[in-house]
Amino acid sequence: MINITIENDLGERQALEVPTDMGFNLMEVLKAYEYDIHATCGGMALCATCHIEIVEGMDKLPESNDTELSTLDTLPDAGYNSRLACQLRPSDDMDGLVIRLKALQEA
Ligand code: FES
Image (tube, rainbow, N blue to C red; front, side, top):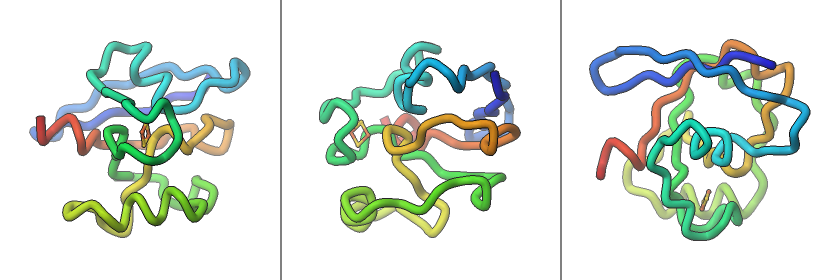
């Protein structure tokens, strides 16, 4: 298990315990915690409803693949620290990550 923290617009933080050995991607973990992520593409890096911003720990993450990069390119509010949660598989390296859920805040 690792800890990943979700920060909301007000700067309030909620720590989640995230398994690294069950084969879930981060979008699936967030859905399991009942965050309202639509994930209409099913985790194919196409719908961007799992858009997150990395507040702390960008250096802990693997590089984006081409599909993720081109989808992020289409988002007006994407920044250098944007990622798609469905493309991140929780690993020990990601312990202590702090993220914001972008798509959720716009809803
Ligand atoms: S679930 Fe669709 S882009 Fe991540």
